[in-house]
Image (cartoon, rainbow, N blue to C red; front, side):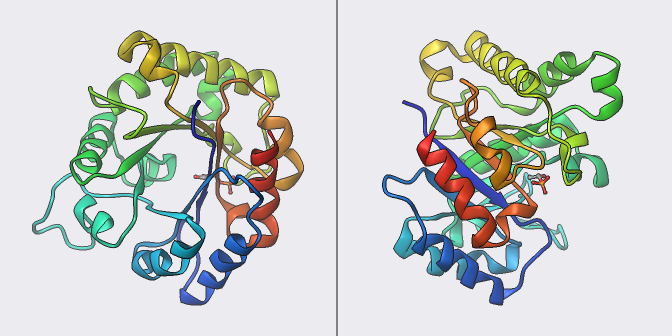
Length: 249
Ligand SMILES: O=C(CO)COP(=O)(O)O
């Protein structure tokens, strides 16, 4: 059985006051909840771990540096993320690939650093609108996967999030068949690289305008094991119904 995962990427939103939302999410967990991961801004990681612990909610970073330490002003190493008590870290989010020109090789180095620190890496892949409309989606996903996921992945160390860039923060969601096509493709790619036994245990998340209203539909897809949610993960009132939909799927 694969882990079902409801992950919330808070991006650059939220101060300590927002941690009351984590408490509210914890108090509203359904019976037999999926794995819930909240990824707050780096300064909140330690406090978030304290707040989330009684509920078994996991905490994740939104990025990490590939090096363990050094003269990298403003950056956070994977070891620091792990030291805060976090257990996951997002790497290769499209906003970082775009704004910071992160390459697949950069993302792979970050994922490797995450593993060295004992973290599970949530590796993000996804095509932009031009790539989608010109029919290059699967080629882009193939290249990102092979370049961004280091050798030796396992279900303990790797989660893959498919986030079409054009669906992030836009309210546009792909057709279910489009989500299924890409998730089936990612599963097949992982199978050819790591073998069926390992691939079958790696959770694949869909991300991009997931809301309470569309979550249950998205979770119907066979190779969708959860979601990586942005805007709708900031408030318990929005995220708790998504967690419930995943538990019921
Ligand atoms: O980028 C995302 C999660 O990492 C998705 O963001 P939205 O859910 O706000 O579209």
